[in-house]
Image (cartoon, rainbow, N blue to C red; front, side, top):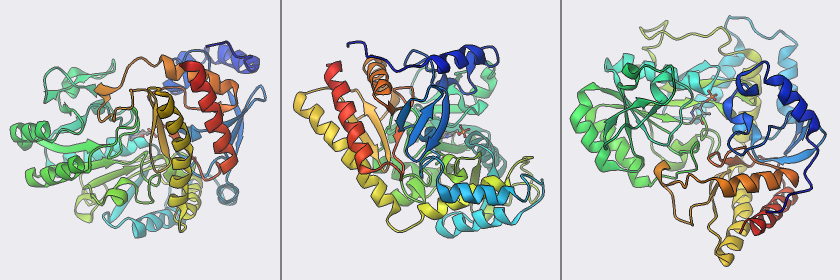
Length: 434
Ligand SMILES: *Cc1c(COP(=O)(O)O)cnc(C)c1O
């Protein structure tokens, strides 16, 4: 690929040199460091609608959208107004506020399979608490996760499959004791037989199964409906709780996330990202019988100094109100389909091994020879194509999350012209690749 007349990144580069003195790798969350795609990260100065600007003044159409939360794009005027109005009364009290009731009732009215919620401050915290609740409720210790699903940096879930089919995990991060990892069984996605074998062997010890019903943190690994339905049925049969981690899919593919889209209901659900309108919020919820185990009603301890923060609640509520408007998700999905179809037909005509996979307004560049990919082991680990394309697009004013394993997002602020422009740039980039 020819070298682009690259954009000027000198201020971002200076800031990165400085930030390396302050933070490990210069960042506060690893993927931001651009290690996967090579090069150095852009420091973002501002965002508005579907655009972001870096510190050097370069403008990009943003398909990262803060990794998912910004379904209304940057600085939506109503969300902004709601944040400012709420902030005028103070930022945090450590006491109950009306805003928590408002956001909770708005959600619970629209998501029928949960009776109660608890707000926390991140997706990781929601998942960590949901696992503790499942263990406290069932009195069992082991948990099952799937290879290729991400659930935040919870100790018990930073676990890889060991060798063999239904195996006890081995920790995937230093600092997670092997004894913790051994409480986690790691199974392949989309494989009911292995799941059943595992349940038959260990059901007496398994508290819960956790899955991203739409796995979207390691490519976009759309599962067969029969697998998700089978998983639900087996959990019921073996008396094991099912947790849907909808931190990324909740309020994204439909208001009620994958559960609404597929009509499959877990026992516990976790939310994050979109629920906070761009501010730090997570939540977990379940039926009354399960939620009554959470303190102070029950024995499962869980707390948070900034939980239910009123400013974050206000941002979330305003965003979710707009998401719940008639036709909101259909329009987003249509835009996304339009975006990927042009690129996909171009790739098909030219026999290029790339296909964009999508669901709702989530899309992923799958450089896997147009095979449908259902598990992470099928992903081609060579990300050279994506990395080159990523770099090309940055120089053309299109910002994708800096890793080929990450999905992209379309917000309500991405209009037809922006999408056509981006698709055109992607096609030009692909022509240079092959
Ligand atoms: C982002 C994500 C998390 C972690 O959320 P944080 O807010 O980053 O802690 C957990 N699960 C899924 C499915 C996610 O997409």
